[in-house]
Length: 410
Image (cartoon, rainbow, N blue to C red; front, top):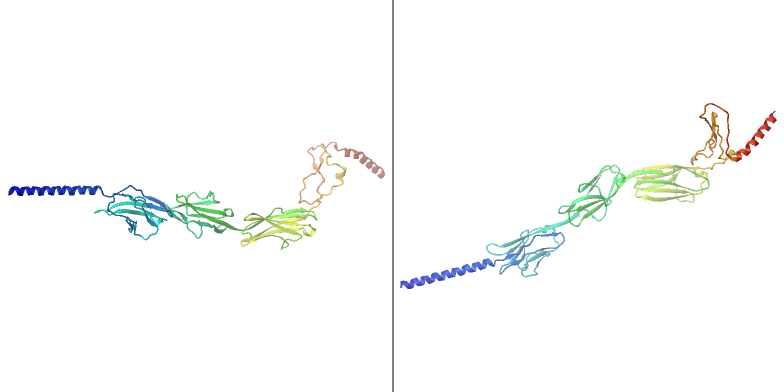
């Protein structure tokens, strides 16, 4: 009886031992077949584009894959999308793929996304970080249009460019789209004691390392009072002819620039024809053509400019020019003849000077012989030389006339 009981106990022990071995074997198999993730990397995207977050799970078995957003909300569970965000969808090219696609990503979409497998007692988690870069953007009403800026000479002008983006953008300033006007970047450009030469186009460029660069253009206009200058202050003209007077008017803005005479504006007529030529946005040349000039047309003409900051005038004087009349002496003695007295105390010298168009043509001091002191102090006998053949013909005739005059006096 005891032997039978021992045999039954040994069989029970063997059965228990076998059962435990089977349980341990099943446990080893279950550990070996736990779900695993393939290596995936973080994702960097630019705002406005699409971002795909990949999660590839092997040996999933009966487990379920779920996605959780950085804010802790469930995006999907298995093949079912839970979130109501229409930009997100589940992408499965293969059985192991449990990817999600986010369209038109924004900066607020950045953060850690969790791909979770509901294993027990601890779930398996794969974390993928989504980086979102934002191109630089300059804030304003309409950055596509130039911004007009007005200032007077001597004032201080401040130009501001506020830009956002990620990474934070750096702002550089340029003039006329090519010249860098600052050594260091900054969102503010200050121009002190401004002059008219500072006027022009200024551009700020925001760049944060991405291919997209945002720009904004400022058009700086410097206001100043008129400045007028005539090209010829005195002009000689013969009666019956015509002439053109010109003056330059610089002002910002250019409001009025006219020719005047006796306080009245000269307009287009049979006598006057004014014309305007643009030299640059701040300077014009104003011409005045005067036809068939008579004596009453001579005198002073005024070029006058005016704007809200002041006024200025300049004048040109129109006078009659009379050509010189040859003298009688110049008909008898050629220009090439000369009289020299090297040993005398005084020597006659022909005065020849270039004519100025503003000189009086009937100046009595013109074309005369001036006696200048000689460099020889000891007087001696006089001598004369002539290189002209006409002078040699007239010398005997002058001597005969002088002798007849002497006889008659006797």
